[in-house]
Amino acid sequence: MNFGPTPLEEARGAILAHTVRLTGKVIKKGTVLDEEAIAALREAGRRDVITARLESGDVPEDEAADRIAEALMAPLIARSRAATGRVNLFAESPGLFTLDAALIERINAVDESITIATLPNHSVVDTREMLATIKIIPFAVPGRVLAVVEAIARGRRPGQAQALTVQPFQSLSVGLVLTELPGIKESVMEGAVEATETRIRALLGTLLPVERVRHEEGPVAEALTRLKRAGAELLLIAGASAVVDRRDIGPSAIVRAGGVIEHFGMPVDPGNLICLGRVGDVPALVLPGCARSPKLNGFDWILARIFAGRKVTARDVMGMGVGGLLKEIEQRPLPRAEAPRTPPSTNAPRRARTVCALVLAAGRSRRMAPLNKLLVPDAKGVPMILRVVDNVLASHAAPVIVVTGHERERIEEALAGRPVLFAHADNYADGLSASLKAGLAAVPAEAEGIMVCLGDMPLVTAPMLDRLLTAFDPEEGRAIVQPTFRGKQGNPMLWSREFLGEMLAITGDIGARHLAAKHADRMVAVEMASDAVLRDFDTTESLKGLPEFAAKR
Image (cartoon, rainbow, N blue to C red; front, side, top):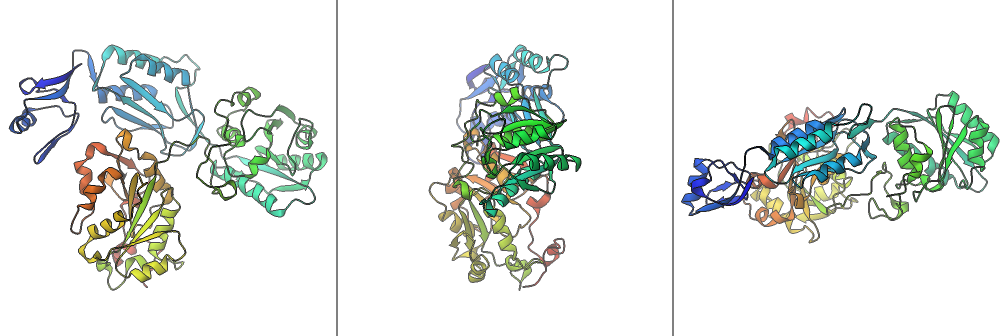
């Protein structure tokens, strides 16, 4: 591939290397220059442009990314279409993501033009979560280089695992034995059950009725036997006292119930004091004290593998030391006691961008007059705006700024007690842009992005919002994030701070969506599994399709 300045006379069919902005026209990076584009450049006074010109045997970036993706495809893995030399791979099912690290490293070592980035090995993933991204760095790859990469990706020996796999979670029945000692607070016992059940449900499992027994070998062994007879496919012991030896109460009870101890301890902290055993073919674990907390610990790593149908061996446990120092990992900046009781991630967190959320709630609701659509209650009496704000608060966006205007006092009253900031649009009657500007003026200086949410979209959930946050990465070219459903563009949209000036310049009853077309090379679409991102409710007729709401004040 030839790269560099190219006279316009020789540029036909070449690939434009950098976006060129002309008066009334933008020629985007990656455009194959035709006579019309060259004429526009010449009219603007340009004599040459920076281009890439393919040579014989070169494979264009999209075709190269597409071929590598096809070579890596496996069951339960989906892919995006190739665009700008990139293909993303996604999980089609909740499960455990595993990979052949050596094979991925071999591919990345072939040539600087081809890169594959993945999640960490043994990551817990959800449906549609991105697993890997294939990116071609230049505009084309030599055919001989691409052939080598395809051969590596396809060249697995018979019986060898796929390069990338998603092992779906099994719906296991889990038995929990909770041991008791005098003086143990009931709140501690309840917390252990709650944390365990949260983990199991997140992995699609079911917790059988809990057995609470004395912290003695005999009663624990009897409880294990009862649970196994009740259909438990995994046995857990949460001791009132931490296990400190293979011969302690918990491990001894496993042996007494007819089982064996396969390994004690693990090179993961927190989680060191875990005991791995089995009763017959049913895995049996004595949990470390840290398992009472919802925070990430070594138990999570073992649990995910078991639910993915993998037999966890002593060697597996001993191989968890690299990356096993989890003590300082904070999923969110909260003290341990205040950590959210949500399923813990098995990954060290990727750097979260600081994104604030604007909830636009200033409109006059003219299409539903005399009702204010944002104050229409659902069947439980919850106003639409409160439902929207609660969804946003449950996401990782912070702070949440609610823009008020029409019926300001009633909106604020409906949100009383919620940890939100308010920004009032005095000129809300001027249209949507006035509300948007009032909210943007309140965006804190540290915010890297702004997620603009509409107050009449109560079906957009926190996990949907978090998917947008995960996709947001201005440094990687994902500076505008828009949800889609079956290719249709939806809301809310997430904007990098770099567009703040242009957004503040908008006038009239319009939002910022038209800017996305102007900056298409900085935008990424995130396909959603639900049409919630397309559904707003601004007429009494539209509310008929939403049984949760009653069209009344």
